[in-house]
Amino acid sequence: MSTPTLVMWRLGRSSPEEESLDDVAAVALAARERDVGMAPGQPFLLRPDGAADTDVLAFFTSSSFKMLSEQTQSSYAKDLRIFLSFLESQGRSWKGARSSDLLDFEHWRRRDPNNEHRVSGAKFSREFAACKKFFGWQHKRGVIPRDPAGDDIGPPGSTGSHSLRPRDARPVRVKWLTPRAFRQWRDVGLGGRLIDGTVDSSWRGRNDGRNAAFANLLWSSGLRLREAGTLLVRELPSPNTDAQFLRARLGNGVAKGRGRDFWMSAAARSQLEAYFVSTRAEAVSRARRSGVYEDLPGRQVVVGQNRSGLHLVNAKGQSRTISVDQLDWRERSNLFVQEEGGIAPAMLFLGDSGLPMHYESWEAVFATANRRCTQLGVPVTCYPHMLRHSFALRMLVTMLHAFDRRMGLTPDERRDYRMLFGDPWTLVQTLLGHTNPQTTRDIYLEPISGLQVDLFLNAEESTQAEQEFTDFVQRHLAATGLVNDGGGGP
Image 1: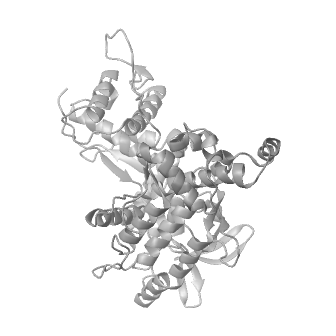
Image 2 (image 1 turned 90 degrees about the vertical axis):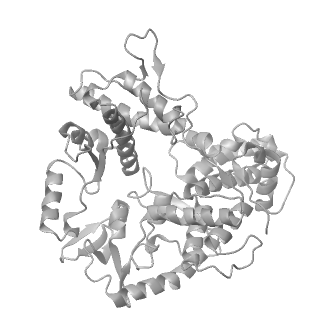
Image 3 (image 1 turned 120 degrees about the vertical axis):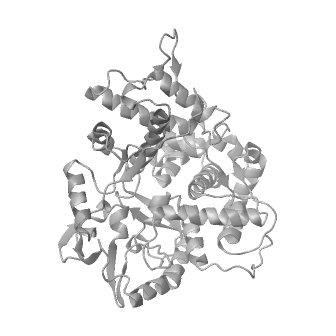
């Protein structure tokens, strides 16, 4: 097999809602896409020359594909694009693909020394899952005579089989930050501080408060990027309480799998309030003065609410009622509310334009902060999901210590308490919104998966949970290389 120079298939997305389109041709295109079964914003693939392959498009409009979550649909489309492009570069049609092609693909993706962009076992495992679903569906439909992506496959004429599911694949390669490392990364990368904690006089950041508030929200709540990045102002809990953690609710349309309750720290909520009345209010005011909100295509303004949901009116004067639970990220970004000074976006996080930020744009904010930390010698790198991992680890350590030490329960009392409320693993599962507690154990909390509970039971008493966590990290977790405790400085 020669090292390929990929001839790429084209990745596209179907048109947004028809009401958000002004061009007549675009409206007609959206209508044709609906006729073939494509949902608004749905991914699909075209051949490298832009021609449509009807059988490939049929997969993307199938119920089998549409049953996947929005995030999985996007990932599978990108993964399948790589394999189809690989076949194209080898002069092969996907309809004639053999198991040996997948073996060649696996070698190129993971072990070919000439490939500068080799991937991990976990990444290839997902790519293989996308291929398996695609070819399995096409085989069942009768488009191809055999499925080249069976569980165990081998080259023609081989006497054995070879599993393409990597043995070293891990669902997620995760790392964690201690509180000290997080504060250092946030203050230097997002807040314009120097490594010694002083203000960088050359710093010209415009959205320090917004960015720090978002990072603190992830750190204190364990929310996923899409969940936090699409929050509506109305979904924030009231800040007027003496509780240390405040309870709120995520809608089905943006939560992974199902709506759920979540908790954020009171300190994080206070920072969000400060952002709302300062930087965000200024962005909204600028947008109103510039008329940004006046003729937005797809705009939906909330004009009322009852038990059935929100009453919305679009730019054409058409009305409808929808539950907050049903709002996906696109609908949230088009949602506006009426305020004393005029309409304003319903979503919490806005860009300089006064329009809602696309939740994936936070990746670029974090990447910029990482580059700044690297330039200033701060040995901490952070990405949004790392803060979710860190939240999970902190909560488990805190709960195990509180449960087995601070509560002062006898073994019988602990057993009764667990029967009534569940053990700390179950509580963390609830905080993260996992449907399966095994996910919590296997993925997010790997650093302690091999440790005995007595590491917590025998920990020295401390009145500060953060110090307990830091001491635990230094004694037991630092050697794994998965937990970053930062470098010098405060």
